[in-house]
Amino acid sequence: MTDPLLELLDYRRRVSEMYRDVRSLRDPDPRGAHQLWRELRDELFRSHPQSAIPPEKRAAFRGLAYRDYDPAFAFTAKVRSVTHESYNVDTSTGGVIRFVRFGVVELPIGTLEVLWLDEYSGGVFLPFRDATSGKTTYGGGRYLLDTAKGADLGSSGGTLVLDFNFAYHPSCVYDPKWTCPLAPLSNRLAVALDAGELT
Image 1: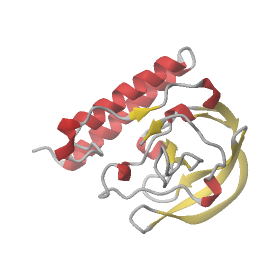
Image 2 (image 1 turned 60 degrees about the vertical axis):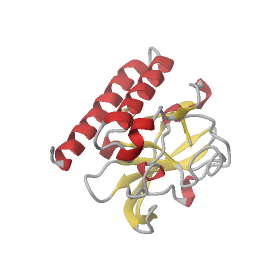
Image 3 (image 1 turned 90 degrees about the vertical axis):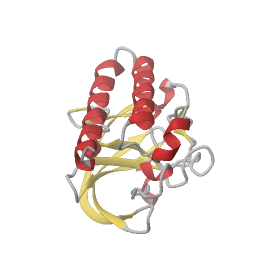
């Protein structure tokens, strides 16, 4: 039996490699990058020991549900620096995780805070809720960036690639054993982002 920590290491490495491939393909072929992302995520969920899908449900797993790629939900935005403010973000299990708000992005669809994970290994984190939350997507929100776990669509200078076609659900959607930070009030959008992963 393989050590679970080595399995987790392998899973995170595969996620990081997947996003590396997505970044290299996204500019010339965003639809192709999105298709690759979907295929690789489905394979990880179907077969990897660290999949968020419980082991007893993996044999019946037929793939995650996604919207087709829509370029209207792809943005590049400059991060406007703000005074660093540390605060607790609620989690799916009733706890909190400490984050630091370090920037804001202003998009045609609304404004979102960009967070830094103040624990663990650090990293940029961008969770959000929108008008689809609790309807066609998870009520606690979805994630767009989580660089501590390899989910990184790219950046240049002071800008971030924010392509909501790559929005995904946290692991706790599939198995409540996972602890997932929920999108804070500051990252709730009034519009429906009909892009990315669906419930």
